[in-house]
Amino acid sequence: MDTTTFSALAEPNRMRIVELLLDGPLTVGDIADKLGLRQPQASKHLRVLLEAGLVEVQAVANRRNYKLRLEPFQELDAWLETYREVWDERFDALAGYLQKLRIKQNEQN
Amino acid sequence: MDTTTFSALAEPNRMRIVELLLDGPLTVGDIADKLGLRQPQASKHLRVLLEAGLVEVQAVANRRNYKLRLEPFQELDAWLETYREVWDERFDALAGYLQKLRIKQNEQN
DNA sequence: CAGGAATATTCCTGTCAACGAATATTTGAA
DNA sequence: TTCAAATATTCGTTGACAGGAATATTCCTG
Image (tube, rainbow over the protein chains, first blue to last red):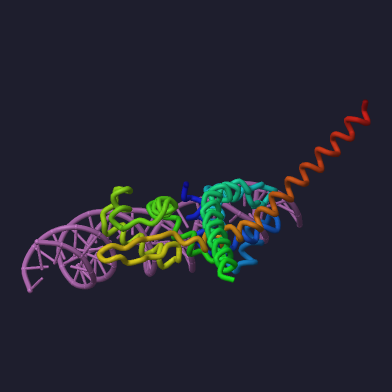
């Protein structure tokens, strides 16, 4: 698995930006305001998110609307599938074990 | 969302370690061998993964068996739920749009 | 208990990323 | 065309982190 999505999201401010963008597109200034960041830092973080493919921009005159891209999250979701299989597997094993336990209990009565 | 899981996985070698551990517990030496790392680096990366809660250790004499912990991945999965809702939403919107299109097509015939 | 295997830790160094401050760029409006 | 708003970029500094080399620690075996 490629780690660029993870490095992008490893920075707390960028994580917060992403969570903000869940509710819809925002401009740089909006984001800076809502997060208490200075404008240049907001711009820089957005640049990183952009290069990581987590957001996209649409220029409207002076402003730039940053919008969440869902593909990376879908990839993350797909990547997690393998891990889900592992925990389902373990859950099944536990269920089987409990089943055996119940049978033994019954035999004892 | 807490970012420690992301920073831990942002480092390529640690990502590879995690993927290795999907197939079951391994010792430090095993991991170092399989990934072509020197033993100290393997130890250090495992320390980070341990502190991030991504793995757990069981000491067996000389060796230490490192094993994947699933909880962080389950948290990741839960966190993704919000994003899934967004893309389902958009998919529904698209489906609705296509539905309308089909109706218009029929009316034209 | 001496030695060797497996692992962890320390120290050093180089690199990279984040922040702050300052400045450049673009665009709409007077 | 000049000004102000919105955004991006550059530069310098600082702190975190990864790798290498060396060393410490733990535990088994002879």
